[in-house]
Length: 249
Image 1 (cartoon, helix red, strand yellow):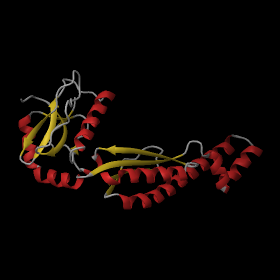
Image 2 (image 1 turned 135 degrees about the horizontal axis):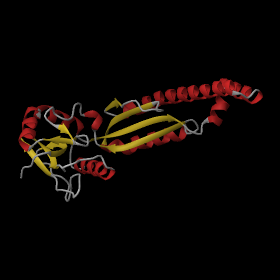
Image 3 (image 1 turned 180 degrees about the horizontal axis):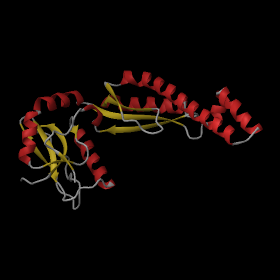
Image 4 (image 1 turned 90 degrees about the vertical axis):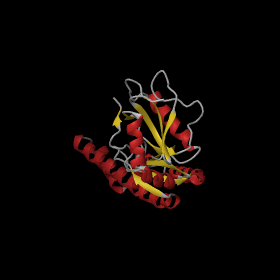
C-alpha cells in the first residue's frame, strides 16, 4: 500500500511491529503500518488532509510511541512530521540507516524522565522565616505601607524564591545525574529554575521517580517539583526529521 502524505511516528529496527489495533492521528482513525528499508523501518499511517495538534491526536501519537517502546528501542518523531510518499521516506531511511541504528542501540532499555523545578506558589511564610532581607522588608512595609515598600518587598521575594529554587535545582542535579545514562537541558520555561530530561534505564525508572518524590517532599516548603515520565526519548535522538520530511499542514 502506498499513499501521498504519510504521517511518520517513529523509526524502529526492522521487524518491529506496531501494537495491535494501533491507529494513526486524524479522524476517522487510520491503521498504522511500517515502511521498511534495510535494517530499520518507519512507523507510519496515511496522513489526514488537514492535521492539527488537537489533544486527542497528541495523546494518540504519544500512546503509539510508548506502545512501541514496550517491545524495543524507538527513535520518536515529533507530532506532525510528514513524508511526501513512501519512496522519499525509504531514501531517507537508507541514507541515515547507520545513524538510526546507533541511536536505537543507545536508547535500548531506556526511557526519558523530565524534571522541572519551580518556586512554590505558597512559599512566602517559609521564606520570611528563613530570609532576613525579606523579613526586614516585610516589617518595613507593615510599618510604612506604600507603593515603593510593596515593590521592594515583591522584588526581594521573587529574587529570593528564584535563588532558593536554583540552589535546590543544583542539589537535585547532583543527586539525579548519577542515576541516569545521559541528561539534556530543556528549553527555558518561564518561572522554571530547572528543566532537564534524563535518559534512565527502564529498570531504574521507579527508583529515579522515588528519588525525585523524596526530594520534592523534603523541599516542599519552597519548591514545586514536576516529574513527567516515562516519555518517548525525544531529548536524546538529535535531529529527528530528515530534510525531505515536512511538517504537518
